[in-house]
Image: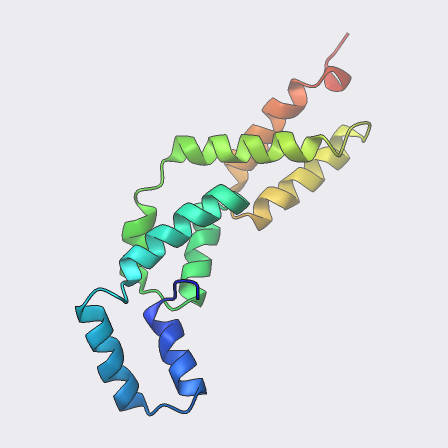
Length: 144
């Protein structure tokens, strides 16, 4: 079984017919002994989603909220995300996606890449800066 947040475990216990007060006692005990730790879960999820999906902090925060992690834990966890690494991840995503877009018009490439990075949670200023840098480096878009 994959790691879960306390909220996800509460929901699963409720779904299986466990009474709320019993679930609370069990989860409190699991938290005491360190088997349920939302902070560790948030750090693990952030690290995993950045490496496997290239998600930006905004998308990570949204996913953590959906999983029931407290806002303060989300804020503390995402404070550790380095903006330079975030930009590097965006560049890598753009480079990889550009391989499938050779020969398309620059505007089409820009539009598709911007939508792609927006879905990953990147803000527009970083998105367009990274896209502009990548497209300017392509031979097909360089001026003669």
